[in-house]
Image (spheres, helix red, strand yellow):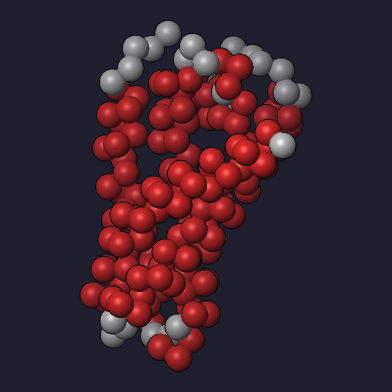
Length: 166
């Protein structure tokens, strides 16, 4: 029951956070292709939602595998970045440091999130707009994702810098 509740909260916040990013991406892709913005808005939102719901569990699984393979799940005194990044899915026991650890881990994982997100969204949009699959359509998706990911960096840097560190 608790898992269903946590998943519903996660899906709600992911959906809410995707709205402005999907709007920017849809605008950029419409600019770069011959597809109208009205026709792109919902498919780009859908592609963003699917990529978010796909990438988060995938990254958490990869982190779990890395954590177990490097130190058998034990907490060690390795570098703070690797420690925080590998422990991202399990930060809740460390609530005292959560407010600076989560932004740091997110910044460190942005390249992985970017690669998965861009690949999934590109694939979905190519399939949805098969009749208009043009060479620069995939490039437009990559550029739009680059733009939105760059726009999120200042937010996470601010989150990291605005809280006291233990």
